[in-house]
Each structure stands twice: as structure tokens, then as C-alpha cells.
Image 1: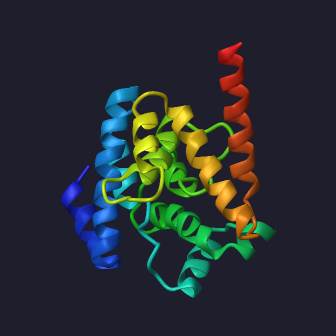
Image 2 (image 1 turned 90 degrees about the horizontal axis):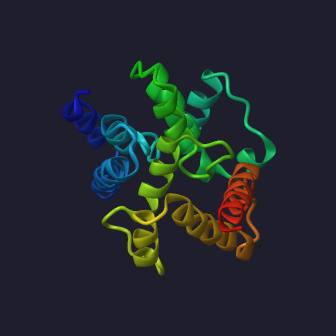
Amino acid sequence: MNTEKYLSLIKSRMGERRYIHSVNVSKAAVKLAEKYGADPEKAELAGILHDSCKEIDKDEMLQIILGGGIILDDTEKASSKLWHAIAGSVYVREALGIEDEDVINSIRYHTTGRSGMSLLEKIIFTADFISEERSYDGVDIMREKAFNNLEDAMLFGLKFTISDLASRELPIHPNAIMCYNEIVINLSKKGS
């Protein structure tokens, strides 16, 4: 993997704050990959590229999504904040020639999660919550959970996201609900 090439690419596509975030997600993803036995190079790549479409125009995002043959469901249509992840997954495949489905899916589902996530998908989802510059209420708890039990951390992050969206009467993507349910069921089985 040519890390410098991808860092240079994303730096040209985003502001300094988002660039720092992407670098920090990449670093956190590598640490999590080393902790849980995932491929650190794939984690680094997915972390660098996860927000590659975050700061482009919404019309351009939509064109990338539609050009990739993806049809948005009603929740996605109503939640343009999810578009960057979907567009990013198409962008890395089409424009950058990345063929690794695990990397592509890690970018696509880093905002919502989904049921049946791979280890790399879980790592990128979690790394996005714990990157060094994050300062939200509960970030220290999330960071601690991330290095103790990945599913506990994901559950904490999903509860945060679902509660926040519900309190603002915004749509919650079914993938987030399915991911939440799967983790709760898995953790209850381990606990019994």
C-alpha cells in the first residue's frame, strides 16, 4: 500500500480538520487491528479513505452513488449525512481501483454499521468514534471499551448514535438497528 499517495489524495479532497481526523482514524484502526488480529495495512487504508467523499458537494456524492449502481433506500434519501460513506465506497472502487471488498465495506458501513460485520468493518466503525481529536461526552469510556471488547465499544457507540438521532426526531437507518440488535443478542449469549 502506498500510504503517502493516499494521504496526499485525501489532503487534496478535504480541509485540514477532516484530514487530521482521517489520519487519526487510520492510526486508531491500526492499533485496533493489532489488538484484535485484523490486517493492519487494510485497517490503515480504510481509515485513511473512510471520509474521502465527506467534503464534496452533495450533488457530486449523489452522482457517484448513482454512477456506482446504488439505489438509495428511503432512509438514505432522507439522511444525506450517510451519503459520504456510500459514495466513498464507490469512489475507492471506481476511481482508486481498490478491489478489496472488506476495505470497501468498511468505508460503506462506518457510519451505520450493519449485521454480519467483518472484523475490519467493526474496527473502522469503532476507530471513527475514538480518533484522537474526538472530544464528545463519553469518548474516554468509548476508548477504554474499544481496547477491552470491540462489541462493547460498538454497542456504546450505537446507543449514543441511536439516542441522539431519536432525540432529534431524525431517521435511524435499519442497518444501525440490525447491528445494535445483533450485538445485544451476541453479548447476551456470551453472558448466559
